[in-house]
Length: 433
Image (cartoon, rainbow, N blue to C red):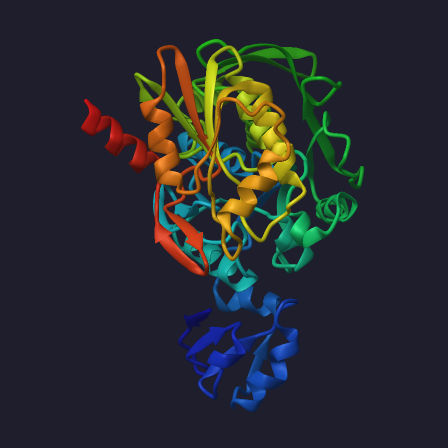
């Protein structure tokens, strides 16, 4: 990206060698180092490293960076930490799948979960200019592998969980776990989900959270009726917390957020609970789109993620619309089918973001995991599948549309077409009523 920086030496900085010329400085990173010669060939006379950018961009050395990584829960956990800190009168920046937010204002629309390091530094500069004390960011496994977090000094690193995902990139689970674990190899303060046995980490400066295993922050009792109520034990004392969020998986997300805020601020748990009560969740994550009929949209697109959201609603008669992304891990497709069959009364298999693949092929891959053929519908067009599910929805049935959450497009053959599950559902129901 190209970013204007006026000084006596250059007019801008860029990490793209094709943009570099005599008027700008090329920022060499772990990702683009092989293009340094190309930048110089194009006339660029100044090459910077990431550390020099902190000073050039005037990023406050007091800005505390918090990184959250894991297969599921990154977005909700990061958003909860951000929300709680804001309600505790802190100035905070948030970067992740949903974009960049600073002090409750959206300053950038959705992008990569973790963009290039220069992109992140520019967002950190914006946060510094607004007087932020904290910068919360989601850290993807791709970003760890490609060192898109080079030069960042984290005040706290948070681990949510590991389950099968991104095996198109990491090749196998061992490599995926190795990459995630690498994030926790140093002496940085760490907050680890003790109930997940996959992760490895440096034992120095480790605090833990969990439900099943003894942890620094441990849930000793909880209720999931009409939201979440949980009792959290810390230092032999127990504190109550409540939230409108749904599902056992959100117990972990909220516990991680509460624990992280306590580590960062040492604020009393009563005040953290008051702030948590104001967090209504993240758009597209277990989002109730309609109450009558009950229709829920969620981003779950991995076997583990789908298991968690469906398990949270298992007391209901479930109808599920879902697909799987193209050009991604094919091994998880029949597993997803098997999981949905376990919980759903009726199943609509459709497209997600097929990318360069044929949607019909992806649907058949998913169907391989489903034994029961009755009440299984294969409809390539996602809008058609969703509307058909709504038309056939019976009393007491709950419709769950999974995979895309609040995404506003479908990627097909290299083109992103406007599409949003929530809008399709609301438009149909409005016309019907």
